[in-house]
Length: 151
Image (cartoon, rainbow, N blue to C red):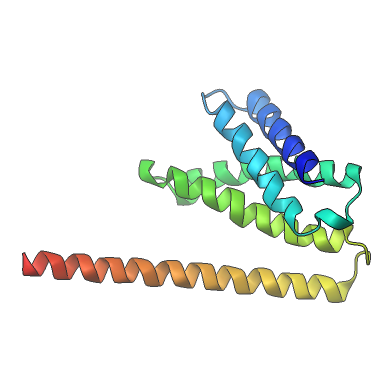
């Protein structure tokens, strides 16, 4: 299932990008879609059928391309932020999709209780990630200022 989702994510991301974009990032998008498929299927791989794994991976590939494009257009404009946009698209958006796939395709079937638990986990992970990133950048800025004053 993991291999099927990764393959479907890569192929879908490549084809989506090939037919809807013109610049030269096709292979990068295909590899990103492949990894996004891996991330998305990780949570529910043992409970998926082969067709469901392909569906999860294919949707993950499209989510990767769309998410990366939106991040670059509206939030991460700078050239040095390209890697960050890829990481957020792959692990952030792919992880959210994979978490929701546990509810959609899990062995217990879709339920409101499980959806609430998964949404709570997504919110906690988002708050933790953003909070920790801000703390690290704050420490770097303080360290950089102190180094400039000492020099």
